[in-house]
Amino acid sequence: MAEYLAFHYLSPKEILPKGFIPPYGTKNFPEACAALLLSEAKRRRLKPLRTLDLGCAVGRSSFELAKKSPEVVGIDFSKAFIRTARTLAKKGSLRFHMKTEGARSQIVTAKAPQRIYRTRVCFRTGDALRLPDLGKFDLVLAANLVDRVKDPKKLLRKILPQLVHPGGLLLLTSPYTWTKEFTPRSRWLQDSFPAIRRLLAPNFRLVRRQDLPFLLREHCRKFQLTFADATLWLRRSTPSSS
Image (cartoon, rainbow, N blue to C red; front, side, top):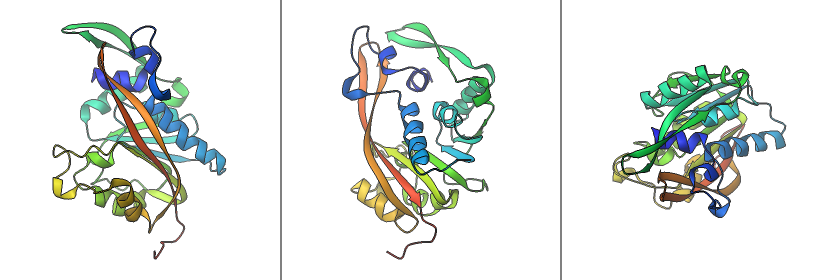
């Protein structure tokens, strides 16, 4: 849990050893995802009334999206993540132990945005492949989710088109780390981006693609640098036959 709280609520500069410069322009990843989605919405003059953060983890992107959307739903399979996100929504901050070395740690604080934004977010536990009827959303974020579900084709072909209003936007990010822990090997996508594009094509049009690098901290001298593939999609008004 501490790694996720640091990933969501601290900046790369705050998790790196003092004096080190964040590599490759890395930023707070959940904040960057929300900013990318909201900037495209602004460019298209889309005012998001309802927004979904699917696979929200401990909630930072949900809170950031709430700065421009009056209703945000954050869903994650992990009950522990949702409990933590709800605590942050209620209290505004949460102290936790961030590992430094061996059994040693330092106490740091995760801080959520202002209360006016936190009250706009509803956190719920749920399986991305077995969602209740949530209605449709103007914006949907699915950050680092596609390679963490049992059936990515179902997510892309069936679930996501049901969630996005025509003219709405979908942001997918993923490093395409296919593992048997999350996805049976027979269901891994081969050549992930072309496969995703093909599966989404009947219902979505690609409008933007870029890398989003991020850092994960294990302890004060060990980090993972990852480059997520971020793709923005516009929901078609009518399904394409192509």
